[in-house]
Image (tube, rainbow, N blue to C red):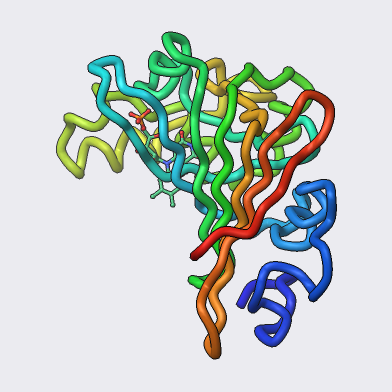
Length: 204
Ligand SMILES: Cc1cc2nc3c(=O)[nH]c(=O)nc-3n(C[C@H](O)[C@H](O)[C@H](O)COP(=O)(O)O)c2cc1C
């Protein structure tokens, strides 16, 4: 289990007995690692494909706060075109291991440059180089050519690669799911109202 994650006895069930927090971000902060933790949750980002079919892929959760859940990607990627057409998405976070799941659905907005720069700095050297080199043209080369291109890369200007873009998913619904070894799994669903959140327990 990674640093910063609470021990297993704490992991089961959604929240302590009694009413859950009125603010879902209180729970999200208890469930997810802080933005400074290097081990980022891998999340499934679902979008609406340009052909009308659902689309999905894994991304790293860069950061989150009350303004939303941030992820970063290549400007030329399919997900970016899809979000330009329909700026709505869902994030499924399975963290840690298989005991807990958080589903976030909402509207997607571009992240601001300062936050994108922070997320860039927090990425490993490998992922920063990937952002510079990750093209379909490179992907079509032989392994030897790809290794040579990778080894020969010299970092460009400091700061994020030009392809690096960030987005923030602003939740309109958050659903927390928790397993329990001695009873049924269950969910806690928060839906945004005009100025607050409405919550309800749901079957797992
Ligand atoms: C564990 C894991 C983490 C990933 N993290 C990211 C990420 O943070 N950003 C990203 O653009 N792609 C990430 N990828 C690659 C994406 O899953 C995907 O292949 C790529 O973004 C292209 O997706 P698209 O064509 O649907 O836009 C990750 C893949 C895996 C398996």
